[in-house]
Image (cartoon, rainbow, N blue to C red):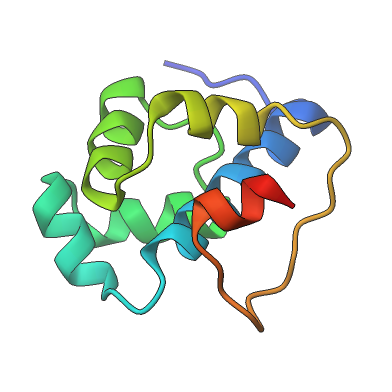
Length: 100
């Protein structure tokens, strides 16, 4: 199966998704989060880094559930137009970040 190249918008959404998951994970380890969501740590790492910009819905749903995010929160975040991705210097919960 040949995958088509991502559009810039898809790549940007993937970056926003990864940033949201990193913030929501906070100090929780990647390994613990991945195992609780029943995904591989490598998969979670790739999603958080934006290398997998369009992960499968069940994967996103499982990770969101483990992190206490609703799918509505995830959807609202990844569909923000042209929103800058904040650096990880001050981690906030997803709810705090979405409220800003």
